[in-house]
Image 1 (cartoon, one colour):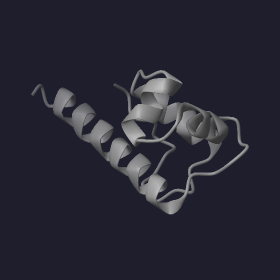
Image 2: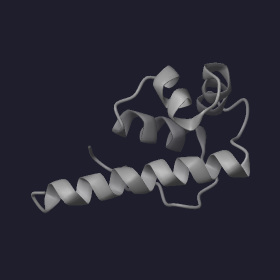
Image 3: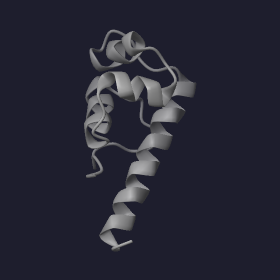
Image 4: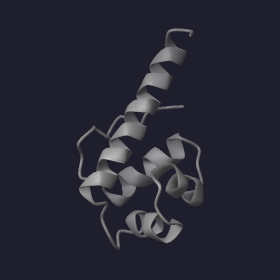
Length: 79
């Protein structure tokens, strides 16, 4: 999986950043919501820019981004 390079841990998580991370993880909106432990409609509101993630959910997004980066790094090293 390709890590979205424009996204940094601790970001405010714009709709585009949420979508880019989800697409990099190859998840549907529903799957992404499940990973985060939130409703599909709540996640959809983030991607559509109607609402922003709360701090606790931003931390969950940061964790998913870090996991994706570690996975990509392991692949690059041939692990």
